Image (cartoon, rainbow, N blue to C red; front, top):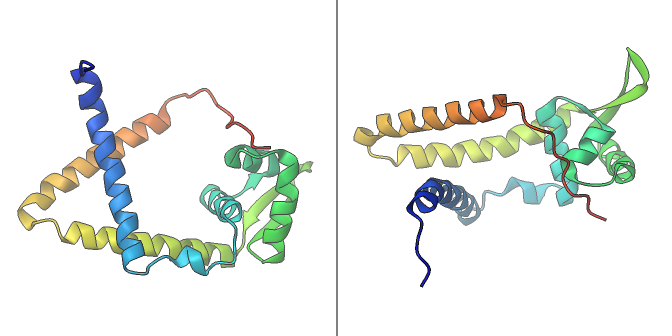
Length: 166
């Protein structure tokens, strides 16, 4: 029998609880038949690329490759397919002719909003199911989580490139 280290267990318990929450939210969506991503004619990597570009406001091919963990040469055909579906577009950079920006179209933005609305609906139902007397404490805890996430984002992190898939 291995001894349990209290510090390690207590620090991972909240992370496990958050992970269980995310899994429960997904399960609610699936149980209700709310999975709009299945209606999209996109592969998983195409959907991930679309989400990255929409959330970033636009990116260069190399940055998209890094974000997806794929080779830069794989980005061109991926973006070509999304351009054909009128979800992404390529824009020349007026300050540097060598740079081409990949940006989302309005159609892509609408798809993104639809996906986020499905998430928001489930989150709203779950929050509404919390007893009124406990909602203030839950909201305060959520505010603390958001503040902590903002602090982590603000840290100067060494940029790591994901391992490339071949």
